[in-house]
Image (cartoon, rainbow, N blue to C red; front, side):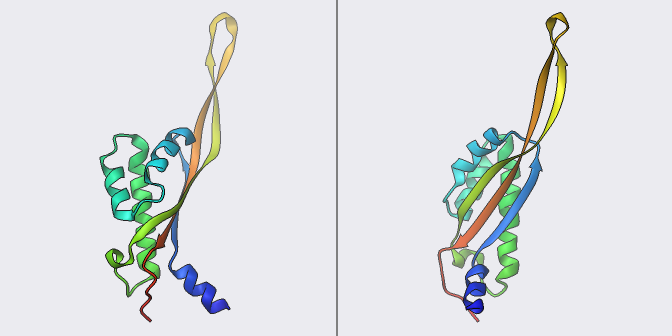
Length: 129
């Protein structure tokens, strides 16, 4: 039983980006573009997107691909048909600042951050032992 679970986990690779100084709403816009796409197609989408969050997601996706390569040393990335099975964007810590406002008041500025997790899976289930 443990061996089957271990072999199933070998096909899945993930990467995490914590405390990214971008608002989660802006990051979700870019994450929705690549959700469920093949890894090479997602890299092209992120590379040519003009949003600032796409640069960070591109590096994270490359990290997840290299994590998959480290887990599966004998396999080729092109043959594995990697795709983004899950991508989540959660809100992170918030820096709170005060900005002066008229008539002696103060407005609160919230500088948001987020946590992104990308999970890659292989459509090609052949494993060479």
